[in-house]
Image (cartoon, rainbow over all chains, first blue to last red; front, side, top):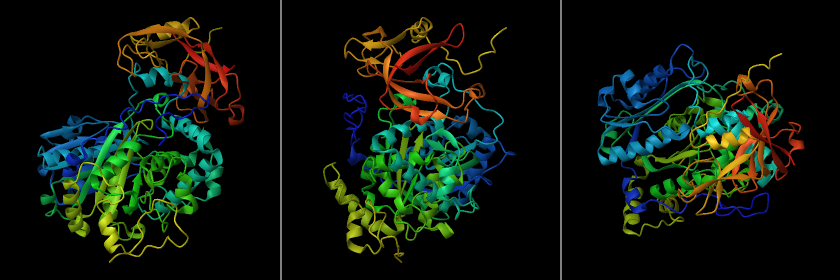
Length: 467
Length: 139
C-alpha cells in the first residue's frame, strides 16, 4: 500500500499520518470471539422511501418490533441497546426499554456496522444476552434539522467556504483519485457501479428505484451536483428505519430463523473533516478489512457477497481498493463489464445500495440487513446462489470512519470452522493469509467459483449452487 | 445603500483559534508550528497532532500553496450559497506542509481552468466586521 510516503503533486515526499496502520490488536484474542454471537433478526421499518407521516423515532420503533418478530423474540428479551444519531436513552425510553448495556457510538453511517462488532463483544463477554441495534432517519421528510456546533472544525474551517455535506467533500476526494489514477478510468468505473447497482435495485421490490432502469447514457447525461459527481453518482435521500438483533449462538438455535454468525469485526477512523484525511484515495478500510478477515480466518476469494456503503459511486471504488479486493487504482478492472451486476462474478450491494434502494442518511445498517437475508436465502430474484459468507462495510462522515464485519452461515460450514479455528488458535497470532478458515474447505469441496479477487476469465460468471 | 446581509455560514472562533481569525482579519495567514517536531499544522490547536507536544508557537506563513484537489459545486448546499453556484471548493497544500480547505477565486468554475499542482496565493475576503476568510487564487 502507498500509505507510507506517497508522492504529492509538488514532487516532495510528505509523511501521511497513518500511525495506527501497523497496530493490529491481539489476533489470538480476537479469534476467540469469532462466532461467539449471531444475528437472529433483521428488518426495515414498515415503509421505506417517502414516509412523511412518521417521525425518525417512530421508524426506530417499527424497525425494532419487526426485527424482534423476525427473530421470534420480544422487546422484554432485550437487555443490550445500541443506536446512533440519537442517544440510546432517547430511543430506549421511546421503546419502553431499560437496557443493562448501552452504546451510543455515533460515527456516521459506519456506526451500525460497528454496533454489530460491539454487540458481539458485549454478548460474548456476558454484558448482555439479547442486543438490539436500531436506526431511524427521515432524511427526506424530517421536520427538524439540527445544525452542528458552530465551533467544531467542520463549522469553522469548511462550512464558511460552502463545503457543506458529503457530496462536496467526497467529490474533492474523488478528484484527487482521478489525478492519481486517471480521470477517464475513474469515470468509467463510476458509471459501471451506478448502472450495476441500479440493476440490483430493479430486482428488489423495496428499492426506491425498483421500477426505474438506468442506462450508461443516462448516467453520463445526468446533471452535475458537485463536479466530478453527477446526480447519478450520489446516493438517495429517503426516510427509513432498520434494526438488528444479536444474541448468543446457543440462544440463536431457538430463534425463528436460526442465527447468522458474526465471524469477524473491526472498526476505526483516521480523521473527521475532509482536509485532514491522511490519504484521500485510501480510507480506513485498509485497516478494518484485513483485521475483520484475519479475525474470521477468511480471505478475499472466500466471499460470496460483498456489501459496502455506497454513499457515492466513488465510495464503492475506493472502498473495494482499501479492503484489498484489488490493488489501489485498479478498481476499474474489478467492476468493468458489469462484473458487480446480477449474474456477474462479483455480487455487490445486491439490495440496490444507497444509490438505488434507500439512503436515509446513515445507511450502514442496511448492508447488514441485506447480507443476513442473502445468507438465509430469502432474497428472491436477487438471491446469490449458495451464499454462505458475506462482508459488510460501513463508512461514516467524510470517508472518516469505517466498520467491517464478516458474516457467515454456520449450519453449512460448522465443522470446518471449528477445525480451522482450533488449528488457528494453536498457531502463533500471525495469520496465514493464503490458507484462511475457509481455505481448507474450499480446497476440499469447492464446487463453484467464489467471488474472486482478480478480474475473471471469460465464462467465469456462471455460478452453480452447491446443493 | 447598504450591503445585503451576509447569509452564508460563519465560523465561531474558539479560544484556540482566536489568533488565526484575528490574523485573517489583518490579511495574514497564521499557523501553529511545533517546536519539537518542527512541523506546522492546520487547524490551530494547543497540542501538536503529530507528536503531542505542548511546545508549539504561532507562525505567520507565506500564503503560498498548490492546488491539491477541488470540486465545482453546482447544487447549493445552503441557501446562502445559492447566488454563488457554480463555485470552486478546494483543498490546498500550503508551502509549509499542511493542507486546508478553501475556495479558489479569480478563476472560472470549470474543471478545464484548474490544474492539480497549480501555484496559488492567499487572498483575504471580508465577510463581516468580525470574520475574514482566507481564500486562494492562481499565483
